[in-house]
Image 1 (tube, rainbow, N blue to C red):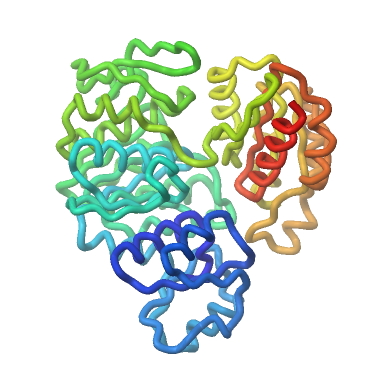
Image 2 (cartoon, helix red, strand yellow):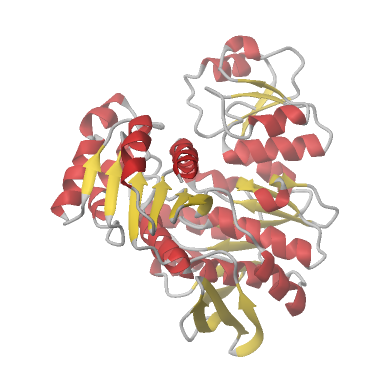
Length: 452
């Protein structure tokens, strides 16, 4: 498995080992979760080289993020072994089960994990692969004896078109992954192709009131049910209340109340995610009592508003948000959850190209932050031209023009040293990004707890 450090690849490796396969893999460097693979017997290389490709490999799987110029991938193709992408592997695994695929620009990992939790709690015993670590599950994958296979369906590189699910959810559609797509119209077209892949006798659960989602599911042959907060949605959250940072709400189906739900995970956006997961699990045969209990006990996904440390009135939270919409909803959620005096955000931009294309939206996305700190951009799949065209200082200037209090500190290690002495009781520090910003969250938590 080339690029095994990626969340989805890592989870698939665990699933394959649980099924009895001998697995080896590589990534460019050491990664979070490597221990869970080696513990289970995987041989993992923390560098990529042609010499990692041994004789007698039955199947070589590579992440969509691995470029064709990667020497290990070149050696794999020359070896005579079968070589496929990660998404193709998921598609093959799905063929022998009843597939359940969760797609959308935002919220996929949480909704996939929540769906797996609901299916398990309802006694359906699914297999699942989630593109993130789920501490409650002991990882991001699992093998069940039931018929369902629940997976996160990623639109990057049109990967989700390898899937042929019986059930699917489309949570939202926005402009992202514009290194793979020309514009939003191409993205909607790809989601439409994904919707057409859902079995004609299957089900699509789609976000109500999202014009892009409506356009995508309009070409589907499967039955479509909608979810949302607005009257007219098939599945609706009614009588929504916030108490002590947590939301509770009535789950209604075609205007009939099914049960009262409450969530441990923070944020109004997670009410929406919970509706989508509930709709899927209920249609698969889950009973209302089991679903209500599962919603109440779901503890969330790693790096989604994860509490890293608290001491002396200072709270450190880590979040995966790397798109302007995600930044906004995550900041709203942590304010709901912790009611802090001050919110300090350390945002590590992910990809020079994404930062440049979504610059205006990023500059306006930090309104709920009292202070923003920006380190250098975490490069991923960027060309040399991308890197030259946009740097972190450009984003800093645009946030400042937008009225934000912001500073540029290039290195994560310098941020920890500079920020820690400034923190006061009642402060909330949120580290955000899809790169290695989690390392800073860990260091800040250690420093905060050590100093207090």
